[in-house]
Image 1: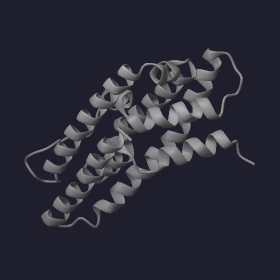
Image 2: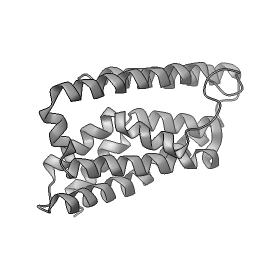
Image 3: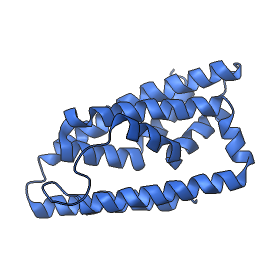
Length: 192
């Protein structure tokens, strides 16, 4: 039987959230190859974030409500900005983001991605291995990075397949609007 930590992390990262939406949209708009830096950045950034929770950063966030509120506000603002850019940038239009995320941008986004923090804190609290903080951080970081790499590959692949259905400007506009609305909704979830 698989370790419950792996099942929990997989379910938490596979379900729709900011990374899933952005990776699917990037796969559709830019193709698989051009989205690889975004994939690698998400996998690495999620691993670092999870590793930090194993080192105790998650406990610090839970103990400092003002710091948590600041992180939530920054996350919501950034997610709303990205939703606006996604809405404005269908394929072939002259506005919006005309390139995929770089690896560094994807890593940095994980610092304000509320879903990643929530899953990482829950995993750290719910599935400890009784290790010292450094090894606990390494364990969580490796589990999150490796599983998230598979999740990212799947959603980008799904986006590239979806692009075959988006054969008109209207279809691209509808796709961009749907992805932007889903991303904006995830910003509201930050405060729940």
